[in-house]
Picture 1 (tube, one colour):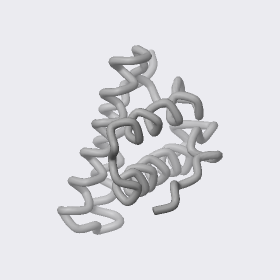
Picture 2 (cartoon, rainbow, N blue to C red; picture 1 turned 45 degrees about the vertical axis):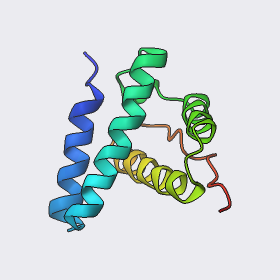
Picture 3 (cartoon, rainbow, N blue to C red; picture 1 turned 90 degrees about the horizontal axis):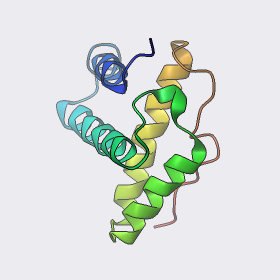
Length: 108
């Protein structure tokens, strides 16, 4: 059985809080960004496992954010959140391929 993304988000949030000692504000921002991303994937593509995420799905989400006129600065923070999350999954051997590798932050 594949593990649901919520499990990985919780592990990542705990990592940010207790190992990285990020501020509560930063942790909440990361959690909101990740929840927003996964809500989009679940609704649009019926995806619930990180191993199912591809670069194309990430690009689709970023395009939607741009269509909603989300500021470049906010999009960059969301990209940073996702990059950190997927890097954590690679580091902990929960994932083999990082879908964020080709993602470039927009200029502001």
